[in-house]
Length: 393
Image 1: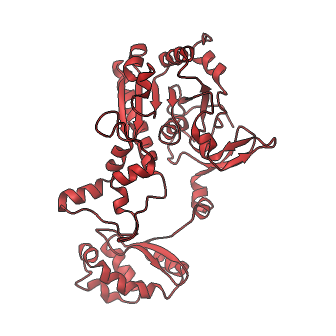
Image 2 (image 1 turned 30 degrees about the vertical axis):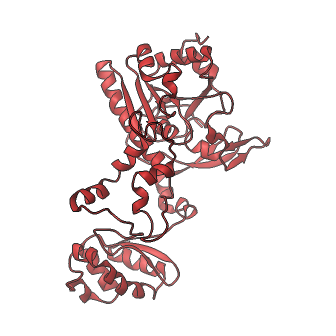
Image 3 (image 1 turned 180 degrees about the vertical axis):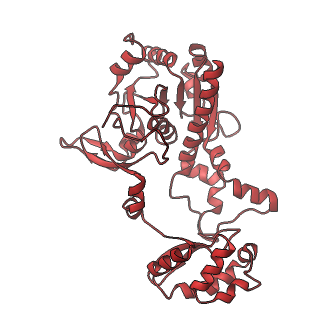
């Protein structure tokens, strides 16, 4: 792994007081683009995700969490006890050398320790201080405990996920945590531009609840416009059809006939070209309104051939379609290899594994893993020397 850092955020110093997912993911986005992200953890065990399996052993038997590694590569790490006056003083000095601080403690914790935004603004007026939490720093739910599944539930996402009439299910990816991290990183950079221009920092109050409502723009606008609550439709779509998974003779596959041309091609593929002019299915709105009848016609036809046959046929006709991959399947896919989305990673214990890359390509910068995820407190002396000119004590 190279220490050469030339990303678009090179030179930006970030302190991350993050644990588990949302805060560390925001920090990892900044680190992947070259920022010097220093993860601050408690000395007695550090970030709880360090204990999450899979725990991969190195040659000497020492284990390291691959979950932790996935959102903490490209960072340095220091260990400070925020209940110790000396360590708090060291952290405040580091704040003076930083441009950004990211934290996802429960609201009120850091202000009680003298490390809230107003406390640290006095140390560094240019500081962009980003607080990530379940429900925001103020309001009726500010003190309410939050995990990804609880915010998916309260935020409405689970009401449109799964099959209608079935038990509620959450999204299989922790979108509450990761959407908050995405919004946080995006807003940090916006405020950093302003801070550099004006000399005035800002406090960012980024919530998981707000993030999930933000990415539900189509569902909320459906409710505002129609006055009806969106409902779960499995893999189907409320405004388009056929746009869902169908069972072939061997397994499921997905088609998304997103316009009238694709719909006509589907009709030709199943041997019913006249279906495209059926009054029930002629327009996109007609098909969405009558998709129960449409599925009843198409499902038996799709069951007659294998998924591979249908996918080849639909691809040949220009109809959007896809297999339903497992993660082992998609991570081994030739197109994912072409995109460079899977990279080798050496853990701090020497174990060799893989991780996913920063997923956006850009000119002038090739993503690389320039630092492994840090051992707890691995860079205390190094960071103090670099950021504080050797005056860390």
